Image (tube, one colour):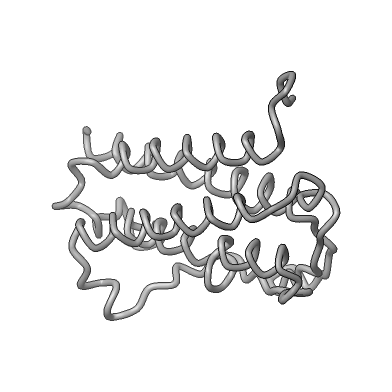
Length: 167
């Protein structure tokens, strides 16, 4: 629940900043094991990272920016895509950190561009392709569910990978 005199914008910025800090702390020291998986059906840390950075396609920061500007009235979400490319497989930890920092910088800019009422007033249709469903989502619902909810679930996944590695 929002605290007294805390704006929705401030709350969203704090949420994003907290997730950024937690994520960067989790990948610290993982340079040598970004591609390790406990078994063939599991995802590596690298796969988890590019999954969250690019879900929905082009990233939630781009969708939020488009919704707020009025340029995006719909977007697609495909579940369970790791969004890996040959180029990303070759990235070192510094490039991965740079991608994370760029994402959070652009998300902060998108959130800052919103007026307080925009979070609940502006919406777009989410085409949930893996479920075959369409749902209208406000900017705030997107930040709560697709950003915070989705990302927190995958932070837990990274914690489990660290634990499996004895880190």
